[in-house]
Length: 275
Image 1 (spheres, rainbow, N blue to C red):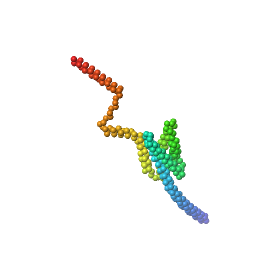
Image 2: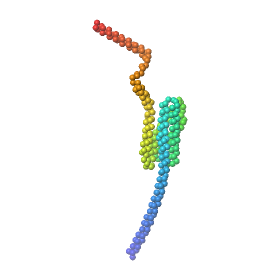
Image 3: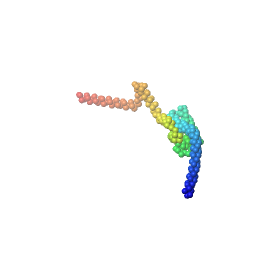
Image 4: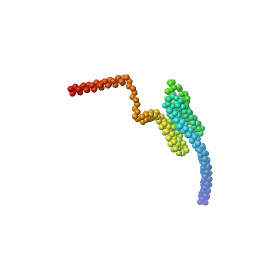
C-alpha cells in the first residue's frame, strides 16, 4: 500500500511537472515571437527614420560647409585684397563683394541652425553641437559689428577694426574646426566613410591658406619681376648717373688739387735725389 501510494504520488507530481513545463515553454515561445516581431517593427521604423535623418544631416553639413568652410574664408581674402589696393572703384567692388559673401554665409548658417534645432536631438552632449551654438552667436555678433562701422578718422575706428578682425578670424577658424568635428560625428552615428569628404575639405583649406599667405608676397614678387625684367631687357644699358650737387663738386675739386700737390711734391723729391 505504501509503495503504491508513493508510486501514485510520484506519477501525479511528474504529470504536474510536465504540464507546468509545457505551459512555460509555450509562454516563452510566444513571448519570443512577440518580442521578435516588435523588434522587427522598431528596427523598420528606425531604418525609415534614419534614412530621413541622413538627408537632413547631409543638407545641414553642406549648408555649413558652404557657409563657414567657403564663403567666410573667401570673404576674408577679398577684404585683404581691398586693403592692399589704392582708393578707387576696385576697392569699393572688393568691399561690397566681402559684405555680400559674409551676408550669404550668415544666411546659410542660419538655415543650417534652424534645421538642427527643428530636426535633430540637441542634447549638446558633444563638442560639435556646443561649438556650433557658440559659432551661431558669434557670426550674428560679427554681422551687427560690421553694420555699425564707424567712419575713418574717429577714435572708435581703431577699437572697431581690432574687434571686427579678431572675432572674424577666430569665428572662421573655429568654423573650419567644427566642420571636421561634424564629419567625425556623422561617421560615428552612421558608420559611413567620410574620408573622401575630409580629403576634399582639407585640400580646399590648404588652397585658401596658400592664397592667404601669397597675398602678402605678391607685391614683393611683382617688384622683383619688374627689376629683373629691366635688367634682362637692357643688359648693356646702364642708368645715367645723377647730377652732382655743388658740395660734391667742391669736394671733387679739392681732392684733385691735393692729388696734384702730392704728385708735384713727389717729382721735386725725385729731382733733388738724382741732382
